[in-house]
Amino acid sequence: MARLVVTGTPGVGKTTIALELSRIYGAALIKLDELITPTLKWDPELQTYIITNEDYARRLIMERLSSIHSQYIIDTIAVNLIDPSLVDWCIVLRLEPTQLMRRLIARGWPYCKIVENVLAEVVGSSLTMAINTFGEDKIIEVDTTNKDVESIVKYIVDKLREGRPIIGVVDWLNTVDTEFLVNLSKEIDNCITR
Ligand SMILES: Nc1ncnc2c1ncn2[C@@H]1O[C@H](COP(=O)(O)OP(=O)(O)OP(=O)(O)O)[C@@H](O)[C@H]1O
Ligand SMILES: [Mg+2]
Image (cartoon, rainbow, N blue to C red; front, top):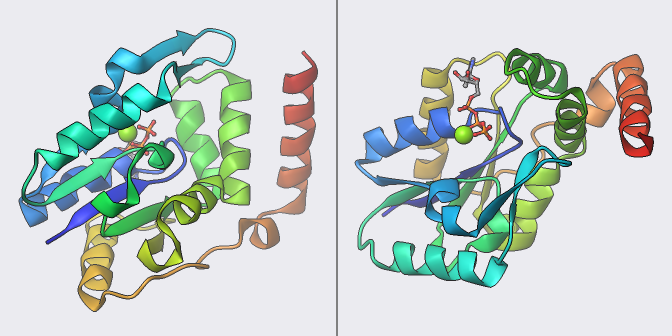
C-alpha cells in the first residue's frame, strides 16, 4: 500500500508528478491546499496564503486521510501539518535553482516571491521540513533537473519498489554559479528592507 506525500519548493513539479503517481497506483489524489481552504487567508504583503488555524488544518487533514482506506498521494508544501503515522514515504522533488527561477518568472510571480522561493530551494528548506516531519527513513529525494515527467515517475516507482530512503542527491550551494547566489542574496536583502 502506498501512502505518499509529494513535496518540494513551489514550481518544482509536485502537482504534475502527484497526478501521474495517483494514476499509476490508482490512488486518491489529495491536494492539501484544497482540503484546508477554510483555514487559508490571502496575505497581500507576503503575496501568499497563510494558515490561520493550524490545529483546525491538522484536524481537517487527519479526518480526510483517516476516511480513506486505500492508497493516497498528498500534494503539498505544508508537510508539517500531516501526522507522520499516516504516511509511508515522502517524495521530495528538487530542481536546479536557475531552472526553478525560470519557471517561476514564467508564472509572472512578484519578483521578491520568486527570489524567496529560489533561495528556499538553494538551501533545501523542503527537504529539511520533510525530514523534521517524517524522519530520514521515510524520505526519497529526487533530482528532477532536465528530466521529463515520465522518467521522473519511473524513477520514483523504481525507488518505492526498492523501499530504501534516499537523501543527499543534490547540493545546490556547491554546484550553482556563485554569482547567481550572490545576486540572490542581494535581491533578498532589497526585498526585506523595502
Ligand atoms: N519534469 C518537468 N519538466 C518540465 N516542466 C515540468 C516538469 N514538471 C512540471 N513541469 C512544469 O512546471 C510547472 C510547475 O509544475 P507544477 O504546477 O506541477 O509544480 P508545483 O510544485 O505543483 O507548483 P505549486 O507549488 O505552485 O503548486 C508547470 O508548468 C509544469 O507543467
Ligand atoms: Mg501544485
